[in-house]
Structures are given as structure tokens and as C-alpha cells.
Length: 161
Image (cartoon, rainbow, N blue to C red; front, side):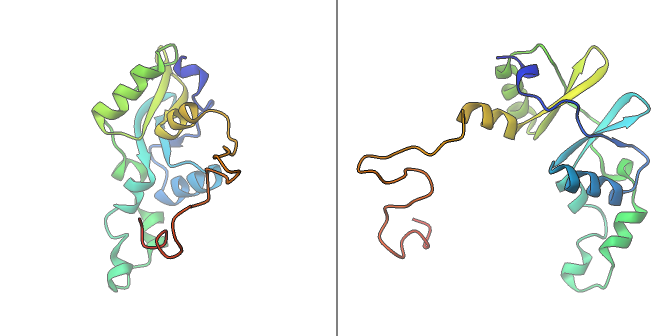
């Protein structure tokens, strides 16, 4: 299997000079956690939800300092918090190479390139989805569903065992 077989294409993107508010909105609307960052047609970075949450001043409201998080998101720019050292992969690469790169570089996504052109994005979720196969409920012996039901004694499942 090749990266092109499981990547999301086209990838939602954001411009380097956009506000974090815009990037957060794109992520929320698209149900994604990573956005390739562009300067014109050129890939210049990646921003994740984690990058946004770590933005200077954003966590202050949690500590009672009175900073308005929405104001911070509107003032800071994508280029202020993005990762500019981008790890990429070619669309024709085997998925095993993508998995190795994700692990080696400890990143959650790889922008997918065809030459210098961004053609998609592959994430750890895409790889897990491919490994899991078609979504269906598996039957366990005795007729109980193996997924979503616990055979633990009452109270044990809630205790994390």
C-alpha cells in the first residue's frame, strides 16, 4: 500500500500570516488536528492543535490571570507557533516508510508531496484506520460484542482495570 492510497487529499491548509483564530476555525470545521502552512504555493510549516494550545498567553485563563483566549487567538499569527522544520513524504512512498518517519520524528502528520507540490496529508490516524480495516463490530464467543462491551465485573471497568 502506498501513501497516496490513504492520505487525505486535498489537505486543508492555512497561510503563514493568518491568525491562530482562523487556523483554529479551519481545524474545527474540517475535523482535523494538523494543517500544512503555505506561503503562496510553497509549504513552509505545519501547525497542530497542540501548537495552538501552547501559544503564549493562551493558557492564562486556566490559571485565573484574566487573559481573553479569543483575543490571543486573533492577535497571534500561524507563523508565531508553527513548526517550520517540516517532515514530508512522497505520495508514492510505501506506508511503512510513512509509519517509520512519524515514529522517528515524533510527529502526528506528514504533508504529502508530488515533487515540490503539496498533494495531501497523512496522519497517524490514517495509518491506524488502514490497519484496523473496515469498521464493523466483531462477535466474541457466546454472542457478546467484543468491541464496546466489557466482561469485567460491575465497578471494575470504571476503575480502569
